Length: 117
Image (cartoon, rainbow, N blue to C red):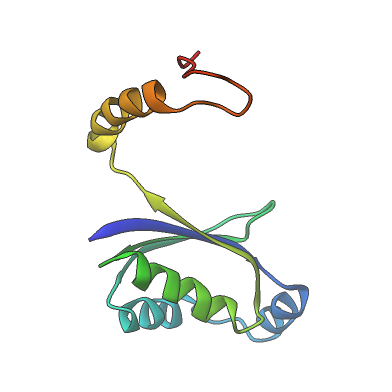
């Protein structure tokens, strides 16, 4: 299964409810991920632009997107984003393919491909 990062924040209303009624967020998140056929790896809490980072495995992009849409539809979260993660051992394959793409891509306003800088 592929790995994904799910990031975002809570709304001010959600924070207020959470402060008044703190509870375990891992269990409901795990149930949501498993309902889509995925597996919850870990949850990190953060501060700044994002309040949480969830690492999960999903069978495909559809399942990962379904999780993001479902949790985002509740109105409790803001700025929900999903990032498909690429394993470190896949980087060489990415770079080899990028080499072929750079040679074929013509940027806007150019008449021929431009090599990567």
